[in-house]
Amino acid sequence: MQSHQLKKGQIVRSIAGRDKGKFYLIVAWEDDIVWVADGRQKTLSKPKRKNISHLWCTKDVVLCEDDATVRATLDAFLISPK
Image (cartoon, rainbow, N blue to C red):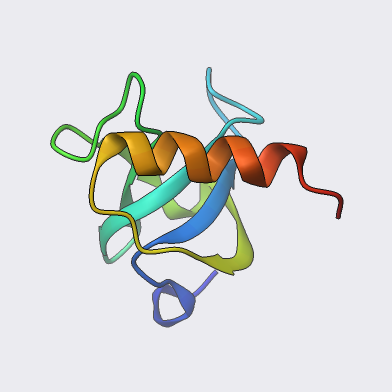
């Protein structure tokens, strides 16, 4: 995946690592590294560092300003019909 395709607030899914299958929101990126948050264990103030090749990107982009909004957004994304 190219870094120019990434957007702040984009919903991504982990495809490798202990958190495989978990959804996150992109907080920031640089080169091949992305910082993501889920609003629970990985907050906006302490995001998780992930290799860009370990992520699958969705087309959904949501701007969230606090962890409660991130949690609600990701929960709604999980239960919405695709």
